[in-house]
Amino acid sequence: MSTLMAASNREGKKLNDVIFQAGAAVRQAIAQHGSDAVVNGTLGSFALDDGSVACLPVVEKLFHALPMNEFVCYAPPVGLPGYKDAVIHAIFADQQPDAFIDAVASAGGTGAVHMAIANYSEPGDAVLTSDWRWDAYGALCSEIGRNLQTFSLFDGQRHFNVPHFQAMVNAVCRMQDSLLIILNTPAHNPTGFSLSSDEWDAVIDVTLAQARKGKKMTILVDIAYIDYAGEKNDVRSFMKKFTGLPDNVLILFAFSMSKGYTLYGQRAGALAALSCSKGVIEEFHHVVTYSARAAWSNVNRGAMTILTMIQNDKALQQELEREQRTVFETIRKRSGIFIKEASECQLPALPYQSGFFISIPAHDSAAVCNHLHEDLIFAGPLAMGVRFAVCSVSADKMTGVAAKIKKAFDVVGE
Ligand SMILES: Cc1ncc(COP(=O)(O)O)c(C=O)c1O
Image 1: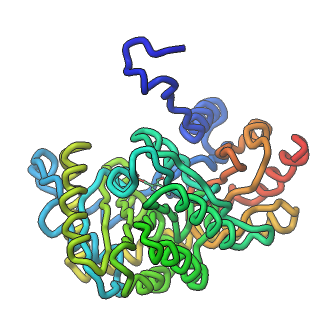
Image 2 (image 1 turned 180 degrees about the vertical axis):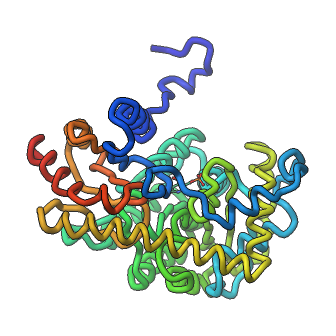
C-alpha cells in the first residue's frame, strides 16, 4: 500500500520491536499470575531480585539532590562544560591512548550510534556489523538511507569469525570508498561475547589493510555494557591499541549512561572520537555538534551533571565502582546458574563472558518463546535465536530455566 499523507520514502516504516512486545506479554502474565510466578527474561535493564528495575544508590542520591534548574534549564548541544572530560574519563579510565580525542553529548547510546552513522557513512552506502546484533542498528541505518550489512560473529567453533569479518570488509570496500564498522564489545548484546586482545589485533589489521588502499575506515565501538564486563582497566585494555593509527582510520565510541549509571530513561550519552589527526577531531567536533543541534538540540542536563560530579570526585567514583561491581557480581551469579544448567542439559547457548544477555540460536525463536509462556517464562524472540536476560532474573528463579528452555527447543523441533 502506498503512503496516505506521509512522504513516499516512509512507505513500510513500522516499528516491529519484538522485545517491547514481549514486555507487554510479561505485564499481562504478571497481572494474571502475580510477579512471583513469572520469569521475566525480556528486560534490558538490571533488576533486583524482586524484579523491579534497580538504580545505583549513588546515582539516586545525587539525582534527588539536584537543584530545580538542573531539570528546567537548557544545555548546549555539545554538552555541559565539564561533561566532555567526564565522558572521556568514564570511557578510557587509565587506558587512554596517545591521540587527539573529543566527545559530543548525545541522546543515549542510541543517539551516539545515530550521529556516527549520519556523519561517517555515505548516503546509500553499507554499514557493517555482526549478524548477532542489537536490533536497533538496522532501523538507525535505514532511517537515514544506509544499508546495514553483516558478517558472521561466530565460526563453526563459536570463535570470533575473523575470516568472514575480513571477507565482508573487503567485499564492501570493493563497492565504496569508506566504511563504518560497528562492534558492540565488551559484553555484547545479545550474546555476552567480548573480543579478545588477539581478535582486536585481527580487526585492526583488516581495517588497516583497507586504509592502506586509501579507504576511509571508521570503527564505532559500542560500549553500552562496559561497566558490567569485568575489572575496569582490564576490559578497557584494548583501547591502548588505538595508538599511531593513520589519519584515514577513525575510532568512535558510543557511550551511554543507561546501563552503567542506571539512567535508562534520562537519555544521556556521548559520541567520542579518537584520531592521530588534529584536523579529523576538529572536523568531528563541528559535524557532530551540528547533528546534535539538528536531531535533539540538547540532552538531559541533570544526567550530564551527575556524570560530571561523579567523575570529578574520587569518593563518589569509588562508591559508583563498588556499586557497579555488586551489579556485575549479581549478574555473574545469575548467569553462572544458567550456563551450568545449560551445559548439563545440552542447551547450545552461545559463548557468554559478561553482560545482560545470553542467546541460544534457533530457527523459529518465536515458537520457542511462545512455548515457554506455558511455564510463565518470557524471553526475547530475535531473528537468529532466543535472547534471555540474565540481568533481570533472580538466582532463585534462574534455577531450572535452562532445562525448561531446552524442553521448549525439543518440543518445537529445534
Ligand atoms: C548494544 C546497545 N547499544 C546501545 C544501546 C543504547 O542504549 P541507550 O540509547 O539507552 O543509551 C543499547 C540499549 O539497549 C544496546 O543494547
